[in-house]
Amino acid sequence: MTSRTLEHHPLGLGKRPALIVVDVVKGFTDPACPLGSQADSVVAANCTLMEAFHARGLLVVLSTVIYRNAEQATVFRHRLPDLNLLVPNSPWVEFDSRLPIIDSDVKLEKRHASCFHGTALEETLKSHAADSIVVTGLTTSGCVSGNSC
Image (cartoon, rainbow, N blue to C red; front, side, top):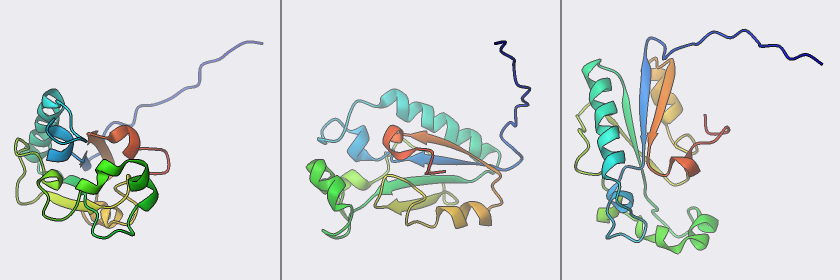
C-alpha cells in the first residue's frame, strides 16, 4: 500500500477575522481564587492579540461565566463546587484589568463552557461579517471543542 499526500491550500484568516477571548477573568487569573492560577504570560499574550485586532478595527469578543441561579449548569457546578464563586457582582467574574478592553469590544456572559451555547455569539459574528475566528484565552481546553464552532 502506498501513501499519498493530499493537496491542501491554507485559508488564512480571511478578510474579517474576529477574536474570541475566553474567560480571561480574575477568577482564573488570580491565584487567590480557588479557580485561579498564575497566568501572567497568558494574559500578556492575550493583550498582544487584542491590541493587534484593535489596531485593525476588527471584532474582539470577551467571555465570562456568570451563574445567576442555582439551576444553571448544575451538573458541572456539582462536579466542581468552586464554580459557585462565579456569580453576579463577584470580583471573580470581572475581566482581568490588564486586558486592553475598548468600548467597541463585545462582552459576552455565558453559563456553559462554550461561548456559542445559549449566547448571542453567532449573531454577533454575523452582524460584524466575521469570516473566521481566532479563539484564545483561559479554560479553552474545556471551552473549545468540535461542537463549539
